[in-house]
Amino acid sequence: MPAPARPPLSLPATTAELLLALFAEQGVRYVFFNPGTDTAPLQEAVLTLAKRGAPCPEILTCTHESAALAAAHGYFQATGDPQVVVVHVDLGTQNLGAMLHDAQRDHAGVVILAGKAPYTVDGSVPGGKSNDIHWQQDEPDQIGIVRNYVKWAQEIPRADVAARAVGRALQVARSSPTGPTYLMIAREVLMEPAVLSPTDLPQGYAPVSAPAADPDALAAAAAVLAGAERPVIVTSRLGRDPAAVPALTELMELLGAPVLGRQEAVNCSWRHPLLLRSTEAARAALGEADAVLVVDCVVPWIPSQAGPPAAATVVQIDHDPLHADIPLWSFPVDISITARSRLALKSLLAALRGAGEDDPALQQRWAARSATLSAGRGGPPAGPVADPSAPPSAADVMAALSGALSLEDAVLDESVTNKAAVVAHLDRDLPGTLFSAGAPGLGWSLGAAVGVKLADRSRRAVAVVGDGAFMFGQPLAAFMLADEARAPFLAVVLNNRGYRASRQPVFDLYPDGLSQAAGDAVATRFSASPDFAVLAAVCGGHGERVSSCAELAPAIDRALEAVDAGRCATIDVLLAGA
Figure 1 (cartoon, rainbow, N blue to C red):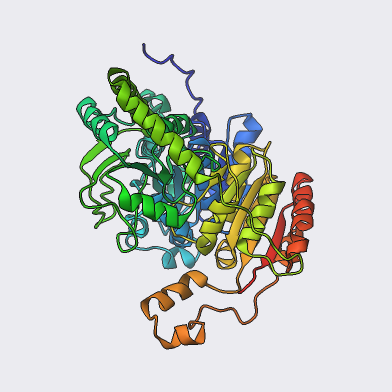
Figure 2 (cartoon, rainbow, N blue to C red):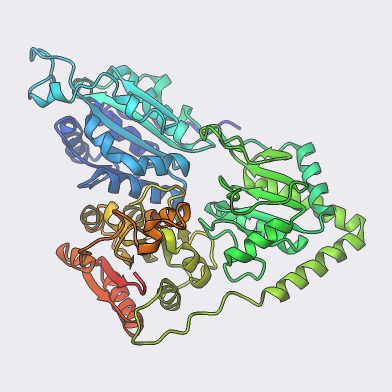
């Protein structure tokens, strides 16, 4: 049945007005806006549309582009709905930096709208060059800055292309596999009279759904898993789709297959006995497996550290199983299935249930294995027993935070080298309550916390972040954006006074080297670590520095009270052994 026709979009006066109206028509709620000399027509268009009572997304002022893109990324993770980030010509595009890398690798649907240096010089066309920077900012290949990192990019060269470009940008961003798109437009074009033909209306740009799994491949996968003696499941981000979590939970319980992998989402309850929260236990299970199901996982294992036996059969389910944008992605796969995980897992479950009904002995073997493994796990690791006067460890911080948060609160994990402590000691049970960048670009969690909070204002957003990542995250810009958006969050800084993620590889590669002997590595230690708590206070928030275990729980309670009252908060935790 065809979709019902929408009422025609009333024609705005300028292309700038048309762009904003089309974004609103397409369901964009927020434009994360970093202005420059090229954005004046958009700024005027916002007021013009408001005066007319015409639809326009809410404009949120962003003082740094990386915080803007991180916020849009976080919002997309929480909702699946792309938002718009406006940046200033090539310079603003470059400032997206690591956050664009994260959006690419995490398949974050977002539309970036960048200005372009004006073309005209004689003043005969509105919006032409009027400042010396309009020559300095005129780069020969501005789109080349982002070409490796976006799914699709397009300049809007004239007014009659604008509507089609918006429709296409959102269509590509929303289509599986989702990802960032990039539009570029000069000031003269923004000021041109709007053009909108009947064929340009946005309802013609439906996103492409994920393909259905091949039935023969599913049958082969079911046969492998049904007959396996030691199956394991590896996933990192299946829980980004909360509807997939029940199917995974049922599958692991049906087969008695433990789940492992870098937990970038709540893929199943973190207290489930079949989730291997210990790195050592996960490596051991993978090393003994005779069948491995890899679902929604870009890096299932690190071959130099762990991996399945050569004789194991590897089954892969992913919306993008080739990962062709990673040139040397070369993990062994015996059966590869392109599909949305929630649908493929349901089909796989149906096939396995059928096999169990046909062979009761098989079903009994699965049940016995599930019971044995569940009993053997003994639940999650015990919490740390800390000396109240001692400096806290990352495990102490996670245990205290776990006791203070509700099940519905959202945690944004950018703990970097303390990831193991987060997984071991922070209990997360509900899908959609843990978020991570899905890529190594540091500085994501602060801006992303704003986006996650905007997606659901009824719950708290808590960023767990290393001190290095906190500084990369443009904290002043993130706190100012949170205030602008009325979306306060708590930042818990795991402060080890340096870049441990950069120090450890030196020790690993040179175990007998001078750095290891000195217990330090060049350029990885901060001689004067800032008081991060003060930064929140500068922006009207609440900040505390914690140096003992006894201070942890009271400080967390006070910080959450501040967040509940509408203020951002930061707890700067000086970790033991740093």
